[in-house]
Image (tube, rainbow, N blue to C red; front, side, top):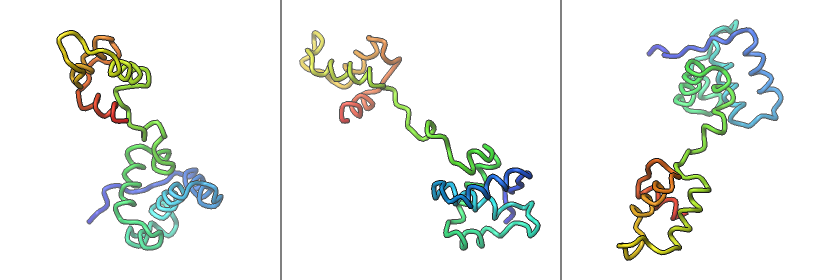
Length: 147
């Protein structure tokens, strides 16, 4: 089956990747990605290695090699060689610390008139009325309180 993404590194890119591999101070995953890209580079004098040979030599799966190739083609060497930036890895929730503090304070306080106790939906409506969030589901409120 033909490869969907082929690796063609420019003149400077192999040098950058070789520095990562040779220094030995980079994270293991970063070094491994650099080794995969160097082995898969079709611009080498010997040509690129076959994916099964790369997988066997580096001890990775074929899917890992495909993911690195795809990241290089779609996002460039920075993402393929170094991984995603840290801000991309952290999940973004609707509630920040300020909103969570208001949520906990409301939970400890008296429920609104006409209600015997706070429900998750009432707490969500309370956060919306305070303009801390535009909208929020009861499940999100429950997860925040569970923390």
